[in-house]
Image (cartoon, rainbow over all chains, first blue to last red; front, side, top):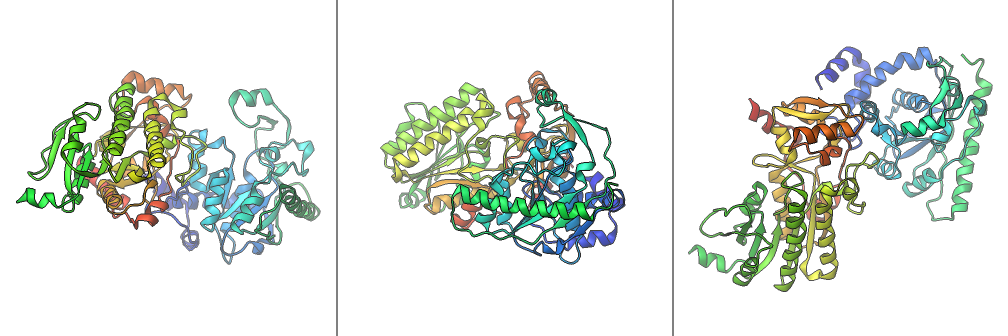
Length: 271
Length: 316
């Protein structure tokens, strides 16, 4: 706690501190929420991520005003890049949006809580175990939640499959309908090039109990990233068949696909 | 005079009466009820107007208490905690003993039974969502045979809850109960100068002050709303931060591979950090207490800071 307070004093400038304080967050008396989000760790992460966002990935953000200022919302994007860089960039973009910043929560892979230090750190920064109950509870508390319906199928894909959307799970659509939460599609361009992988050592991944072991350069490349936020999509809350839900999911997938194409056209070079 | 006053009051049996929580509950109920205190560890003297028995629920003579007093309500707080005794003794006391108690409650027409359970029944699992509600599966037995008694006690209470609705069984699953006099695992850890932690793991926890928990139990006695309820505060803190706030010095134990901390705990015979409870110091079990709060109009009074101040003051 002392280290955290010291780091916060040293690393978080006063204006950023005040800006993040202004965002309403349902935390307890010691700055934690039920999922382990910690106000101070989040501030330190945002402060440390500023140069990475602005200088390293030189992120261009378009259409972020489409994310409602309050109420439950699902930010649904394409997943890529082996590490959860895409989720972190979307979260940073929304946390520093002016006006109406929000601190969205990213659903993280189920294997992270088992990793010492990293699991707790991701929780403190705002990451939440990717479980439908968690997502449902957060939406009922009016949180903005980042979801990647491709899951590890998206993040673990190889470079040759870049920008090809994998199968989307239907869970996010049910949650959107249940909580009357709009879906804001997000097209992420650039993260595919951050850690281009040429193969996946599946047996080693199985042995280590992790989703994949990519064969890639041991560094994160400074690819230029473009985030395109689409118009919010609202779906009828009435119960419907799985077929109809899949059709709705496909419509979100198609929107994300359009936003990816838009980003690819806007991009002038990989770096 | 005291006895005369007592005859007009409904009788209430409180098991585990030697425990700090039971004594706080008795304090709150003795004005309204004729309290019958029972404990198998010791005979507690509370005052002249409180009948006190030292007896094991499994002994034949236990039934005599029901014969002698016209008991209307039973508050079953006499359960062995997970770090007490051994697996078999806990099973005998918590499962076989509770079974007998519930049978007697049915036989003697008790109209309300309150059973103290624990959040341990949910199990500490890496994939636990936060704000677990009462309908979540009880996964504790999946982790270890050492927690079977906790889950079995709940299963029993559930069977009686549905089979004999007249018993109006209320099962309470509290988060960590802490505060003066509490001798459970977490309270002992917060009281210690040096406290073990699993390196790299600091799960979210909830703490409820013993006075608040006693208030919660007293509310369930007064208001009849049978069912299963989590009892938890709407405040959360990471385990290692709770230790820092309680002025404990953390002693990290290597956490990977998982067999290592279990071996260390077993070798050093860490009573308050037993190998079968290690997952509770690794993964969170965060409860949603809103059902209890809304049903009984309950609002805990003690903040986390007040709770930890008590443990800090113990060390200064």
